[in-house]
Structure formats: C-alpha cells, structure tokens
Length: 114
Length: 113
Image (cartoon, rainbow over all chains, first blue to last red; front, side):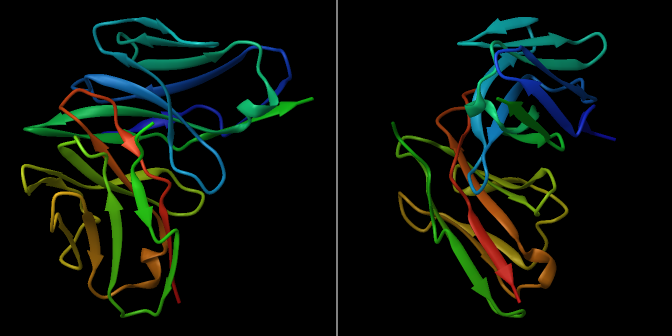
C-alpha cells in the first residue's frame, strides 16, 4: 500500500555539524516531495520541496536529494544550529484527479547538542 | 507574509457534542485541505476541497465529518458527534493553484473528554 516512512525516530547532532535525514516513499505516482519542520504546538512549516523531475535542490543551508530509482528522499542541513531542533517530516504529493493530497512520514526528532 | 488562520487554537468538548473548527485560508487560494495529527503520530490527510466540492476524503472522514466553505473566506470542519479518538491537532492548509506549495495553519488542538 501507500506509505512514507522515516528510517530513524531521533537524530542527535553536534551544533555546527551537518545533519542528514532520510525518508523512503512507495508511491511512484507522487509528483513532488516536501520536507516540513514542526515545532511544538505549531503546524508543519515548509522547508524545501523538489519536483519528481529533479534529483537535487538547494536552499539556504538545506539540500534535498531525490532518488526515484530506490524511492528515497533525504534532507541535508548544513552547519546545524540549535534553532534547527524540531520534528522533521517528509511528505509526498499524490495527484488525485483535479486535486491532490499529501502523505506524511512519521517524523524524526532532530536534537542539536550545544 | 499571508497566513492560514485557524480558530480556536484549543477546544475542549464533551464526547457526543458537535464541534466546528474554523479556518481562513489565504485569500487568493483555491484548494483547501484538512489534516489531523494525533499526539505523537504522523499528520494524516482528511479531506481536500476545490471548486466548492470535496475532491477526495480519507477513510477517517466518515459521516460524522463535513466541510463547508460558507462564504468567500472561511473553510470549516464540522464533527457532528465527537468521540474520544477524535482528540488531535487539526490542521487546515491551502494552496493557490494545483502544483503550488501548501501553506498550513497553526492548528486547532481538539480535546474530547
């Protein structure tokens, strides 16, 4: 069935190090993928997205890589800062007729050590 | 920056009562969504809405749930007779056109007692 999952439930990194968060997806019809950050008591906050016709996209301190062959998505955060501590979700966008829907992964907690 | 606004931020209701969760999507957006997140779990799709009708609904969105866009600005989620398992964060989202990014509201925490 459809599923989006994250390999690790928690990730602890030293401030200043790079972080890599991985995600597997299973729906080959997904046309784009998004990484969200969620802080306590708040809604998902957009970080970066990537279309299915791309394999890499860079933002400010973040890079998303897409490997459609193995249905794998990763988020790289450069020079991780304390403010990056949050739960991170990957999501795939599945077209559904005139509209679409997001299927989210379970979430991984990123903890930045000072 | 335009925001999706949700009210109330927290609602406590007794089991069996009706609740209406309110959302004001970004003004030029045409596609609207409700998602929910049970504490500690992933965000789950409930329903999508476009052109004044439901585009798709999930298995969670049973006969107890309904959505409305009563005017040009509000998008509401009604739960007719709440159950304990409806306790969750409910997020509204919108997007201007198909293929654009989604913008999420901050959510309404619903607690059914």
